[in-house]
Structure formats: structure tokens, C-alpha cells
Length: 555
Image 1 (spheres, helix red, strand yellow):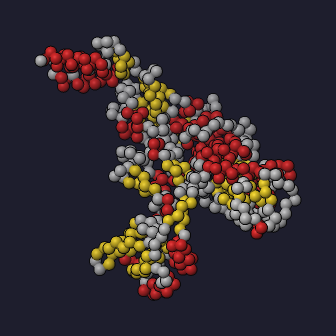
Image 2 (cartoon, helix red, strand yellow):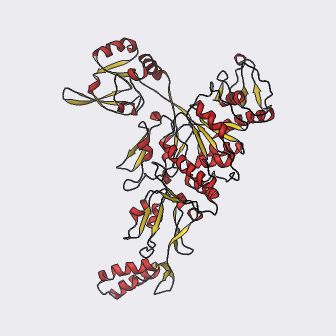
Image 3 (tube, helix red, strand yellow):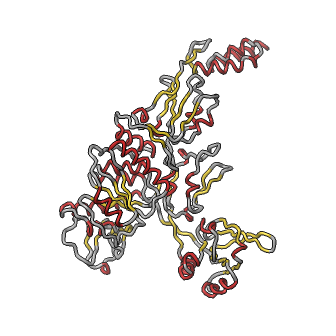
């Protein structure tokens, strides 16, 4: 398979790189390409940003030739990283039509052939479970509820909950002709994509007691992500996913990633744009007929969804570019806006400007492109492929802060949260329950000096450490507060203790305060038994030896 192909009915007035195959007549080409600028060619990926750039860029000719190749290469990286593979599902022919008698009679002849039809009044529908191909519709009729299994459903004047899963359509919302067309096409060839990857090991919901997280399910516009509270697990339905990526932007730890544009793609592709002005464009935005003037060095950068970008993404793009980043989209999710608030606040304090400029329409886009500034000493590279979301942010934000104190960021936005753990060292026994509870390694144990340490820059502010701490008045999480200063990006010692020496063998085996506290609590229980009391001050080996000696002595 040839990787890159270019076709346009209007011939270019400059040459393309030799690795790009120029097609004069797509009808004469049966070959399948990896990346193409035209839908008229068979290709794995269609890249409209290529013609958009060629048509609108003010780059001189040598730059334009190189940048066109770069755009193909970036799409090639997306092709390599993307795992949103297309899948198919067999859809049966049972169809429920819910509406008034007149509405049902108007549509029945149009869908009669090939379907097994069921009918119900609109008000009888009380609940819908499942998804396309396996819907379970709860109908309340004649004083009782029945559950009707169907493959698809046409519901006139549908209630909002109807659109939480795929397979339910409202002619009043989408148009009768479009609904019938979709219902019929589904039984012939229904496809969907697996959109989101999930790492349960750093999920702030899975296995946690209490209401710690669940933002991904709360923000999902469909039933693609559901919280199963009794198991503390997340349930994912690829069939119902709209591939918007909103869940990715609100995930505090980076447990979720967009398969169409994973973090690896953002990093690898943006390295090709070092020194360029990056114009971020979600692939759902139409570029075919967008006419704006692209100043020199502006390069469009296509991403998979419009809602998934977060603070780590933005810092990566900004520091590779060395300029303000322009983000063009007709919709900005709450998660992304929360991320932008923090990133741009850091930009104002570090460089006296916003790091990311947003534009919702053509007029705003042109204004942002014309006002983009180069940011001196802002370019910075790290190898982030093995890093998690918070670790990427920490490394990149640390470079901006440097050795300065840029003040406190009072985090008032809805979805991006950073916190600070405060320990009352007097009450801390170094039991390390908090370390076990922290699955992003913001809290860590250090046996080399018997200390508990904390890194604020990777703390998700979940508060789970506070819940599991067994000591009274010991650990507190200061919520939604981040200090832009060097200490916030380092491990700081919160508590430390000397090790207690076993009274039998002299070996150091546990924190002194922990041993003394346990001994204080259990000594009264042992009712003056000196041997048992002595075992409280022993290492595990000597404890076992003493207990065995006591048993043998009783025989």
C-alpha cells in the first residue's frame, strides 16, 4: 500500500515531495492509500487539512513543500497510534413504533416490509435499557409494566432518556425520512468504533469506598459509561459512545484516553511542529470550505475529538510550538474549559499571556491567527511516552515555573482539581495507609530514611487518603489549591520517624511511634502478662520465638 497520495482537479503550481504520489485521474486508480487529501481516492484516512493549508497558507514555496509533507507524516502518525477500530454488529428486524394512532399509521407502511412491528402509545414508554439490537423497552399499560425486547425503536415526541443509548430515533427530532433510512440501513450494515481506552489501575472510581470520582460517567451524554456502584466498577458500551472524548478531559488521573488521538499521537506528531504555530482542529470541523488567511508558519493539527483535550495536551503543544496555540472548535467541553483555565492562568503568570487562544467561528479564528505571539524561552522537550497525564503536566509546568514563586492558583473550575496533603506529624504513625490509597503515587513511602513524601503536582485531590487514614487529626487534604512554586513539583517530606529496635535482637523493624502506639493500646488487653507485653516491642522473628517458647513452657 502506497502511503501518501494527492489529487485535486486544479493542478498545483508547485511540486510535492517525491514520497507523495500525484494522481491525475482517480477513476484510473484502483490502489488503496494510507493518507489522501481527497475523498475521491481510496484511502485509510482522509486529510482535508492538506488542501486547507495549500489553499490558505502564506508560507513561501520551500516551506509550503515541506509542510505539506509534514501534514501527511502527522496523519501517518495518527494512523499508527489510532486504535479506534471499526466494528460491526448484527441487528435484527424487530421494531417498536411509539406514538399516537395517527403517527403510527403514517409510518407503518414505510417500514412494514422486512420488519416485525410492535406498537405502543408514546406515554406508555417508561424506561429503555440495553442498546441497539438488544433494547428492552418498559411499557406501562393496563395497570402493569411489561418489558418488550426489540432491536430498534421509532418514538415520536421521545423523552430525553430515549437518546442515552443507540437504536432509538425520533422523527420529530431527526426527520421522518432520515429516521427510516437509518433504521433500514442498520439491519444491513451497522458499524461503530471502540473510542476510549481505560486503565483501571489509576482509576479514581474503581474499588474506592465513598463517592470519590465518577466524573466520566456523569458527563457522558449517553449510556456509554455507567457507574456500577455496588461493585465500584465502570461499564463501557462502545456501541453507545458518541466518540466525543468528554470523559477523557475530565478524568483526573489519565485513566481514560481517546483511541483516535491518544497522548502518544499528540506528543509524537507535535514534535514535527517545533517552532510552528499550531492550529488545533477537531476532525469533525469542516475544513473543505473554510477560507481564512493562514499567516506564515501556521500549520493545522487535526485531533480525533472536540471534547477530549486537557492540560497535559495543551502544555505539550505549547512547548513544542514556542508560540501561543490556537484551538478552533464550535464547541468547548466543560472539561476542556477547566483545563484551559488552569493552563492560561499559568501562562499569564509565567509569560504574561494566554498559552492557548480559542476560536468558535471564522471571524474569531482569523482574529486569533493574526494576533498569535511567539513566546521567548518557552520551548521545552521531554520524553513523555512513558509518563501519565499528571506526570506530563508536572514536568512541563515545572519548566515554566522554574525557580520562581508564581503564587497560588485557587482552582474554582468544575473538573480540573489539584490538592495539597497536610500531615500533623505528631499524630502520624507512618502506617502508610495513605500511600496504599494513592494510586497516582502523589504519596510515596521511602524506607531509606523512613519518611512519607508528597508531590502536589500529581495529586488529583480525590481525598481518598483522608478517608483511609486511621489516625485522628492526622491527615487533611486542602482542596482545589495549587501553588505555582518549585516545591510543588518535588517530593516533600510530610512525616518522618526513627526506627524502633527490637528489645530481643536489636534489629530495627518498624517506626518508633507505631510500635509505641500499638503497645499502648494492647498492653491493658494482656492483663499484666509480661511475655505477651514484651512481644509488642519485638520484631516478627523474635515475637514468634517468644510465643513458641511460652507454649513449650506450658506443656
